Image 1 (cartoon, rainbow, N blue to C red):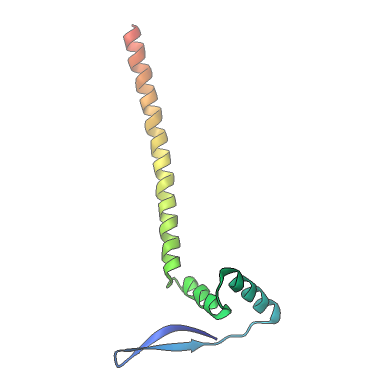
Image 2: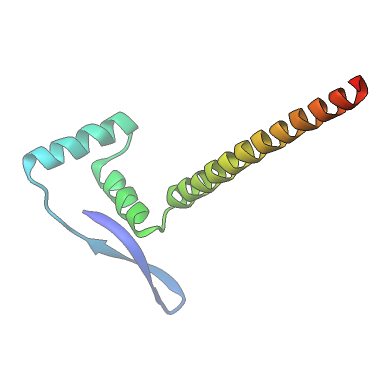
Length: 99
């Protein structure tokens, strides 16, 4: 049994229950992973659902990490371009001094 979502009723937050069934092997895998993470199977299932829906903090954190990785890659490319330009300018200055 997993609790997700809220319904506002008279200003109060009310949780709704979601229930689903797993076969033995599915449950064993969920339980094994939950144990490994130090969580209950229900808590892990809730986190997985919230992450899938994009409602968890870890989902937004994952997006931020992906965005940062993209920015990092752009910076690396730009730094490489600048490095090549500086090397070219150094060669030009060196050749002018030698003339």
